[in-house]
Structures are given as structure tokens and as C-alpha cells.
Length: 341
Ligand code: FO1
Image 1: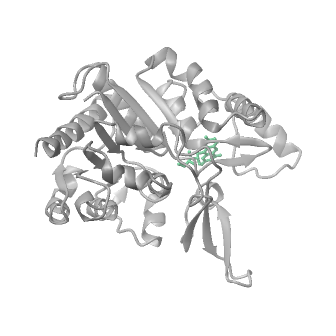
Image 2: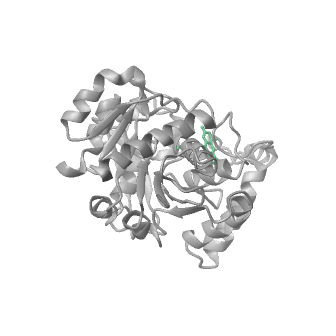
């Protein structure tokens, strides 16, 4: 395998990518050349305009994580960060204060916003930022592609007794950060998704891949939005590459983050099997060939297999890069069985 494509959200996807790259460079993945190229197609529907700056959380989390600039504790933003600008904005009474931009992080958003204002598409902006963050560490072994250059934004409808309709719609980040996903999501609307054009290289990255991976990102608001970009789902069904996914749900709960509330209120069963079946088998109108669940969910393997998916129970806790590399190796191993099959 020479070309691996990963459809990624933020934290979970970024941590998986760290382990995948660790495994590739150390030759730990069966049948994967040490000079294999990983193409990341990242979700951009979490993006938001704030204080006049364009913030792209999932692109930045992948970029900072693979460029070793991420704050591991928070899982987003820069390590060794300071918050002077945020504090000054609060002193001016500027809203919102519930979404904080660190001083170092702001430089990324200033560069991105200036380039967008100059007419560069998000894909070229991302390429420019990655020349600083990824090239020095990974050379050309990693490419980071926005799922689309068009504006796409996830908004969440929540109950609001004060509203005439009884509902209010908030930007995903307000739902996720200010509301902590603690109110039921009555609907998720991804504004602009149906009209979005796949970003440059996205479709080819899927159809030309030797392996496509759906990492343990949120299946609705992260991977789900990528699958919703027109032509992406068709490319996944058409690609010769095996498509393998890793469950973000272990033991009936999300490992980190707040996916449980979001998934259950959107009718996705919060279990390893539930998410696998939500993606579905390519043979039955879905997008997967194979699905990995954690060993604690081994009892669910049979149910996943009955839906036409190859399924295996392996350790799925990304405790460190070696554990994550082992997960990537298990995914490659299971995927190779599909092609030989
Ligand atoms: N998450 C928070 O919980 N609080 C924040 O103030 C916050 C700021 C922030 C700034 C830049 C960025 O790239 C991410 C940020 N996040 C913050 C995380 C963000 O909500 C998540 O990374 C994703 O959108 C969810 O996957």
C-alpha cells in the first residue's frame, strides 16, 4: 500500500493520524511502504468566523498535532499558549467570550484570513500553513486537504421555549463549547453542504487510494459531513481501495469529547456496532468494508458481521503512539483481507 486516505475530524482523527504515521515510518504496518503517502481529507463544517477571523478547528487540530504544536491536554490550540488578546477582548466586553483564541493561534487565523481576503481558496491557504507545520516534520508524506473550499457550517437546532417555533438554531461551536452538548440536538443542519464542491484533490484521494480509513472521529458532525459533500460518497463506493473504519465508541460511550448526547439525539445508537451500522457496508448501500471495535465490545462483532461488514475486536484506546500504531496495523491487516478476499 502506497497511498492511504483518511477522512478526519479534529481530536480523534488527529490522534489516530499520529499513530498511523508513527507506524508507517517504523515499518509496523503490514504491506505499507515506509514512504507511503497519507492524504487527510478534513472536515471544515466546524469552521467559524469570530472577531473577523476565519477559524478552522479540525484543519488546525490535525495540522498542530502532526506538526507537534498541539496542546495535548486541551486537544486543540497551541501548547505553551498565552491568552492576552482573549483577556483584552473580554475587558472590552467583546462577545463571544465562550470561544477562546490563544495569542499564538491567532497568528494562524490572521494568515488564513489575509490569504482568503486576497482570494486564495482554503485549500491553498491550508497548503501554505502546512509548509510551515507539516513539511519540516513529514516532508511530502502527509497532505492535508479541506473537504471543500466552499463555506459549509454545521448548525444545531435546540429547544427554546422563548422562541415562537419552540426552537433556536446555534452554530455547532456554540452548541459544542458554550452548551457543552448538554441540551438535546433536535436537528443538525449543515449549511451549504449540498451546494459544496469537493476540494481540489479530494475525490482523487479517495478513488486513487490503496486504503481509505474512517478514524475514530465523530460519525455525524465530522466524518458525516465529509460523507455529505456531493460526490464523496459515490467515490467511496467506487474506489478499488478497501474502506475500513475504527469505532469512536468504546464500551457504549465516547472515549473523549461529548459525542454521546449528539449521537443519541440524532438517532445513532451509541455503541461500536451502532456506529458501524450507521456507516453501513458498501455492499448494502453503505461506505465501509470493515469495522474495528474495541475488545470490550467483542460481543458486538457478530452483529456487525451480520450486516455484511468484516469486523474484528482489537484494543482501540489511543493511549500513546505505539498503541495507536497497533490500531492502524490492525486496520491495515483487516483491510488487506478484504482485497485478497
Ligand atoms: N474548545 C473549547 O471547548 N473551548 C474553546 O474556547 C475552544 C476554542 C478553540 C479555538 C480554536 C480551535 O481550533 C479550537 C477551539 N476549541 C475550543 C475546540 C473546538 O471546539 C473543537 O476542536 C472542534 O471544533 C470540535 O471537534
